[in-house]
Image (cartoon, rainbow, N blue to C red; front, top):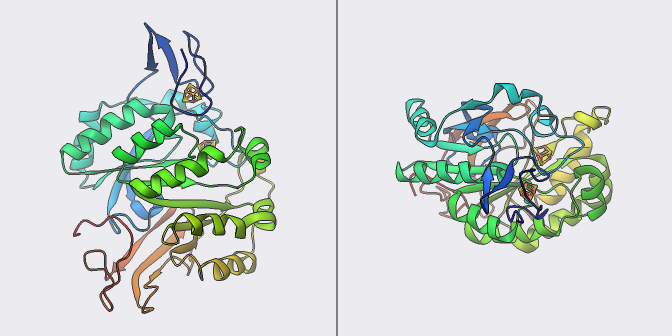
Length: 323
Ligand code: SF4
Ligand code: SF4
């Protein structure tokens, strides 16, 4: 039978599909090693990154191993591609995980370490239980899932961050090992309609030189209020020799695109000054953040009142606990 979780649509049998996480058993798709997690620790939600969701809260970050993509610069390639850490998987069913969320005073769970589509039934079961307990669920994704899966994630996740790495099919084939970008663009539109969406784009030289402003135009055409994270690339995996982007190069992009996408941020390096939120209407500084390193940061203070600018009352898109 065909797996309908992502656009590879693998033919499953007792042999798993491309991601290695599903097999066919008695006419059903079965997740291998459900509820086996590689990590589950509280982190600031800004570290995921989510900047407009539950600002200042801690969430439990978790994930498993494997991926349906093969990104040349994957920061988690030891989990997602090489699966070296498989021996570290620990079993915690949904009840145990949610109990830990409550014990640590966290606001919910973010599935962040590898592709959520590769452990979809476990993630959905955890999200359902979190919601029953009045907690939150979010995920990071490469966006290559089927339309059915995108709709399911949009329904079950309070916030989703899609990594939009390029608009070029050639780049997706060469650098991600995926056949093309079209499903990702379609799913971004679904997420934008149905849940809180943030987008992250790693600043790879090839992308910056050829298409970064086209990516900005695409995001703007979907919704100019989308939160966009411009990420300094962490040269990793097959791209560990990639030249680091200079401040000047990154700033030029940030200063150009923030004029059309006011919730653009530039981060993933310690001391970034471009992680705060200003009201696009009155210019007030409304959320002050700190970026303490790659994938680390937090909110210093937020002046938002029920998701609105305290000075002019403009609504700022996001997920707020007091709204
Ligand atoms: S989720 Fe895995 S098994 Fe299913 S279609 Fe995608 S790669 Fe294949
Ligand atoms: S989609 Fe994410 S987890 Fe998967 S290989 Fe690419 S960067 Fe790694």
